Image (tube, protein in one colour):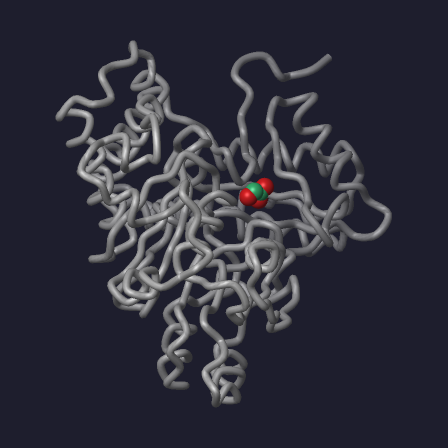
Length: 396
Ligand code: GLV
């Protein structure tokens, strides 16, 4: 006996649920990639992506996932042997740093751990110690989906400024863009990147890089540049030049529709929806954790991401068994634990095309799994989430 008939619900941190409108936007024949209309669509998409990042910089759209956009960002501004400082807070900044090392950068990691955000004061101290200005770039993620942490990009930007350091500030916003605020110009970010398959509700396959004027100037002398990722080549007038080849037109139609949905809801409303749904998940996990069988991966509530919540099970309990129960019996697919948390954690994504029934339904299935698997947990987590949302969304 299972209860999993109907559409499977994906609660993993990317790819996320693709809205039907976005799926339908791709259901059309290919068209002339050289037409002025298609070129115009790309120009508008670039402007709209810059708007999401709150940046006056230039946007480049790549056929690629986040790892592709990492490489695009690095190769356009670094030269071989450049020193790069990686601000560790889980898996992904470290992964970006590994890519930089593979491309020939000299990578130093400012160690963090999987239970907390990057400390801006430590960044400032390291930069002040770099009196020779050897560090050319600083890499950090806004949200690390493996640890579940959110880093304070504004505070890190302020720390770099306070140190008076000239390194480029480069931020991965893959698991945050379109869900939480990002203020590229105001926060002093020089290069930011993201991808389509998380908060932007699209199919995997598009990556974005935004560069401000300072980064664009560094690009002119960077020697890590390669033909496919190169910004200069992509600044050509022709539509195909903007993609170093055939434009991914179906993915562009999907992106257009997704951005239209986001702008129609309004960014403040989108951010507030994510805040409230994350708050509901937090309330439920807090109650469950009181039973001793599980805990948040990030103890400080202020450092928990509003796009994904990572839950670590106590020794002796299997996160994979819990995930399997939810998926096999109820059709709810939770994220696996990654890296240091493999097998020990599960992840509840609440990013992109999510609403109250999706989140409350997911929480209910998890609570059902905790009960069925006899994992000690405080009772009433879902009720606490409902109470929280009812208080936050009063009757008018
Ligand atoms: C990918 O980003 C993931 O967190 O699984």
